[in-house]
Length: 276
Image 1 (cartoon, helix red, strand yellow):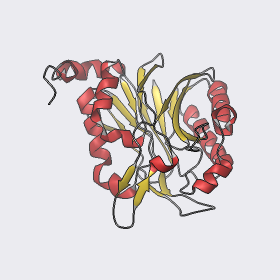
Image 2: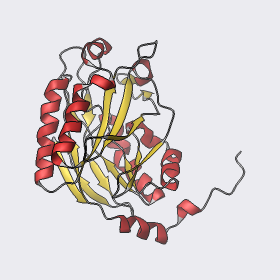
Image 3: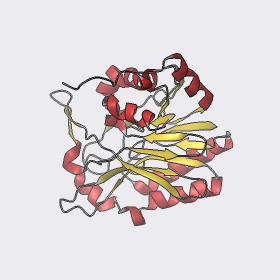
């Protein structure tokens, strides 16, 4: 299976982002991709809750989801929508950060709400409180895409290795980590964490990313790290998107997953001890 990982510089205008994403999907399909992945918050990158409340939708009528379902069907591809920011019915008004796996018929096969919220103080001038605007998910998800079983995660989940071990033990051979990583933490930890998750599980780790300074019509403009990465089951870098919008293409060969796990069968080891 040939996979294309898209690197986007999404703005806070969902309609504009649909066009950009659709164009890149067409390019990926033209290059032979049968599986296309987009980054976190494909529909809207915004630090303004006021703006988000004005432009975001519920899942049932979200135009980005509907457009990308139609695109997957028209192109006959598997599509991982890294995540969409969506309204919910929660009383506190918080949004969902939801990833979707779409099949070649345009059907939603699985969805996953980001579990771990990015509540951190990176420096005196950079802090995030994702949980103030988004409510966390509460379930891990492994989905069958035919060519592979896929463990779905989003961005900050990357720092919690037990989640990835459990996904791999549940049958995942491909782990998805769509992201909008901070430039500071990205430079320090992005590659190391992605390679570690691949090495620990013997999985492909596919991490499509947002990149650059994102145009904002309201509120401060966000910056993201970029460097979309595809990592093989042995921990080798198969593709690097660097910092410009675009895509990387790789070939997925699930025999490589079996081979890596035969060489280092750590998924079968190490859990036979009493917890402290």
